[in-house]
Length: 279
Length: 186
Image 1 (tube, each protein chain N blue to C red):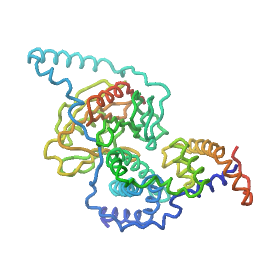
Image 2 (cartoon, each protein chain N blue to C red; image 1 turned 90 degrees about the vertical axis):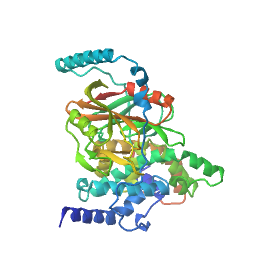
Image 3 (cartoon, each protein chain N blue to C red; image 1 turned 45 degrees about the vertical axis):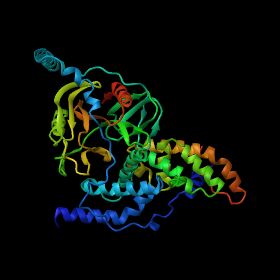
Image 4 (cartoon, helix red, strand yellow; image 1 turned 90 degrees about the horizontal axis):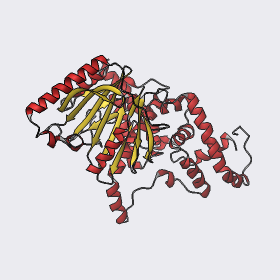
């Protein structure tokens, strides 16, 4: 069987053989670009599960522990330049926009959507019902519009200030710059930027929340990435947890969010626990 | 001409030249409502990132790349509509069928459609870009973010699978039509 024969047979089932026959309205209105968003939302559960316990600790003990951790962490970070060792799951499947529902297994999220480069995150999904989303994965909870998700991406531009429209700004060129940039977008900072080791890399951790009054029936474009990646959210009270990692000089963002039940959050946590970022 | 005026002029030019192709691309892969949303989303990104849109002949592959991403985002919206769809089905008002199913008018067309559908998602997308969007291998590589060699390899593999699946259809068809000149698929 020849290429031409196959092409002809596939061409015959083209549902739109002649695009010029389509009727389309005139040039769209360009003055209100931020409209109609379907995006993930989070709640506090993902980052606040253990906070109740912390409230009961005495201030002196808390201060002492924090001081010890701060000093020890600073010494460790200053004296050890090697990234923490982490081994990604073997033979992951590369996620693409066409991935759709994924079976349990190991997956690779390409941070820039360019398969000719190797930087990305490998993680394992052990549960049913997850969907592959380049660059990451999410699980939607039936028809309730609730989902949990994990994104692993590079960032080109950050919109700021997010509350009130905003405008795109070039993304910070280091993990620390990027973390501080996200912290300054106008969202309420729940947990300030702090050094962290995660997913086999060093970087910075940040938790933000959308303040009341920020959203007026609209959602916000927060970041844009290479290969047309982007992220819209949020609703007031929504919380998103970030890790900004320095991967051999390239800042990589890991973004976790949830608006679903505790069981689903535990699945997300299990997925995050397997994540390894590699250059 | 100010930058803003230039950008608007360029956007309108891209819109006029490629809107049908982008909408067709989306309609070939999604329901009518989702396709329209994804098409609008695509041109929203074009407007916002007009400085990053390459000039012709790279413009259209670039637009397909954005549309591909926009359709992926529609998947998320699809999940959110699950409950509504269930209700509509119970009322006997099922939503529009998948466009690929709509076009099936003959038994052998169904065999072809099924064979394409059974390809791996990425291979299927490459075949559709090759045949339906009529892109060159280099343009397909641009849309998919792959090397040209990777596209060649995947097309070769996809056509081998299609060849095996479509052989019976060809045998039936050949009884009523003249043979086509050979060109190698091993």
